[in-house]
Image (cartoon, rainbow, N blue to C red; front, top):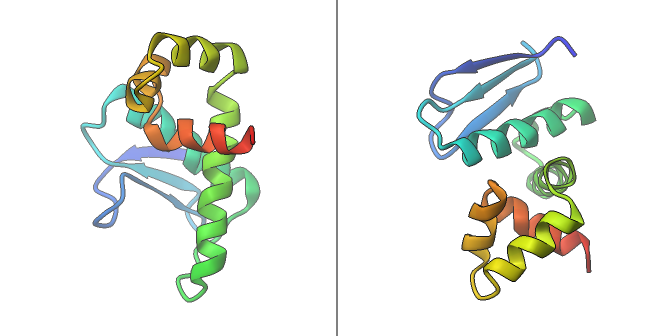
Length: 115
């Protein structure tokens, strides 16, 4: 794929960033394992989809973010693993996500896609 991954401080308010011009994923230093694997999958989804930054188009940006979450969720989760995690922690999405080593956001994206 020819993608470089570096630990550096991305823009404020983000844990990672896909820079399509340099084909680089920038991840914030010090992320937890599950945060890092999720942001890498999310940013790789942007890369594989050919996403570019378009700050003037908020609706399109939100759609790209949601799609990247969905793709990342498909890469990181399986139906059996999710079913097991939800059985272990039926009353806590956060606990189920921790069991799966993903963020709440990625588990939520996976669950949304199942509806």
